[in-house]
Length: 111
Image 1 (cartoon, helix red, strand yellow):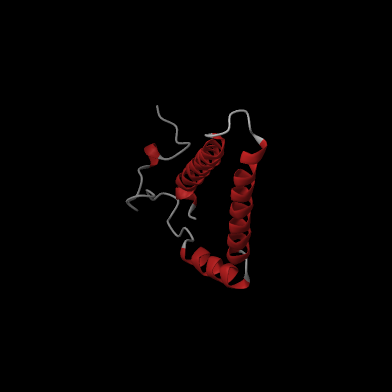
Image 2 (cartoon, rainbow, N blue to C red):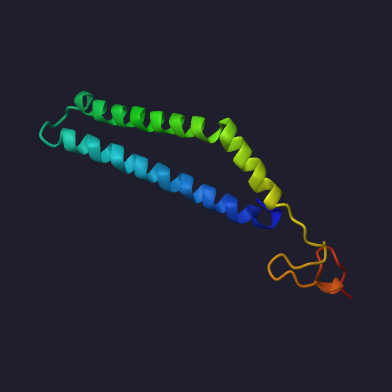
């Protein structure tokens, strides 16, 4: 990831995590509500569906983790990293690649 895009990547990762957590709570809550619907004050029987959903999600995460950290994945990451090396000059705009005037550069003093 180029450093100029690191903030965007962090935002996308954070948003994805929050959406996943929200959906997880909603799905587990829905499963529990379906099982409780006909039986007031029965909570123990409802937890089984939630726990099995969590186990299935955990297995999915494990499979994705193994697939994304294997030798092939590391090779792909290395090739992509080579392509994303920031080769711009320090005085180039990250979006347009146009030269940035000295007065507009980070840390430049204005009078």
